[in-house]
Structures are given as C-alpha cells and as structure tokens.
Length: 221
Image 1: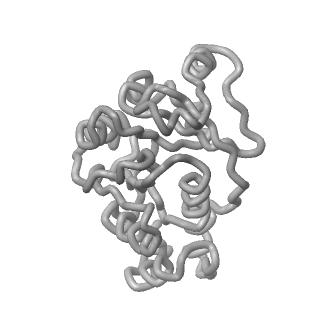
Image 2 (image 1 turned 60 degrees about the horizontal axis):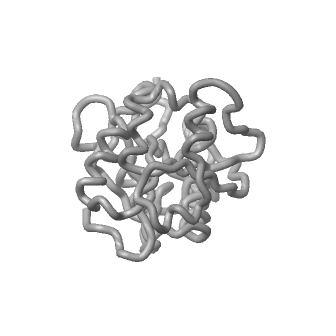
C-alpha cells in the first residue's frame, strides 16, 4: 500500500463488510468531506475478534469493497488483515500502518459509538492511541460513556477535530453524521429470502453477489 498524500491524514474503517453497502460508503464520504483527511482505507477483517467469522470469505468481502469504492480517489481497500493468521486485531494493523506512514502522518481509527462503548474488551485498547486517534461517529440515540474507566479515558483524550490536521495520534475525536439506517444484517436477510437488495448497495456489488452465489440460503445453513 502506497503512502497517503502529504495534505491531510489517513483514516481506517475496519469491519467485516459483509457485505459493504451505502451506509458504509455514505458515512465514509461525509467523513472525508468534513475532516482534514486525505484518504480513508476500508480494512476488511479476516477473523473478527468479537464475533464468529462470516460465512462469506474475506477475499469475497474485500473484492466487494474494491468494487464499491471504485471511482472515489480518496478511498482505498487495505487487505493486510486478510494476510494475517489469527484474530484481526486493530492494535496490530495500526502498528503496521504507523511504521509504514512514519511518525508524523496523522492516522485515525474510525468507529461507531457502539464500538467505543465496548472498547475495554479490545486487545490492548489503551495502546491504540500510541498509533492513532480514535475517530468516533456520533449517531442519534448513542451517548458517550458517563462513568467508569472508559469515561475517564475518553475525557482525558477528547480533542477538537482540528487536531487531525497536526497531531499524528493520541486523541479521541467525535464527528456527527446523518443517520444511515442500512444494515448488513438486514441485507443478508433480504438476499437469503430471495428479495432484492437493490438501492441498498452499489450495483457492482450486487452483481458480484449474484455471480458468486453469495448469501443464498444454502450458504447460510
């Protein structure tokens, strides 16, 4: 993976992308439009640490990501977690990225408020800030932790989004985005029941799903 352009930082959006859909894509676009980001990398997880591995292979999920982001020069697909055995820990991926990008490039890990609330269960969660900022997507109905260890951690490291322009890592930044009421779970249910998922994802992704027979009932049973 080549280095990002000098102007702006790099953000990483990890997940299973099972499958990628317009909710992922629109949120990513709003982030790069609103914040000083030169590039946003979608990073499909080979083996997510906190859930069962998806029935659809990591290679297929990454291929769908690449189809979905084609034509947007600020987006990229980072396949590094597909090449690594064992759980796909963000700590390992961010450490690799930091070594590749150098010590000065701002780097951010994008997560939803729901993921932030479970952060204390992540592998070496406090050390994530050694490599990157945490860029938290604020959604209606979700609130930052109010008490406890995680709340103290968030308060200690919270900063204004402008910090993404100058500091390479170490802060927690929140950004409010418009609601995107699309879920991969609902899309899989539609496809498994034989209904159309058109207008929920790019046509190129839907064509790939049909061509490869993904999410059919026989694949889920």
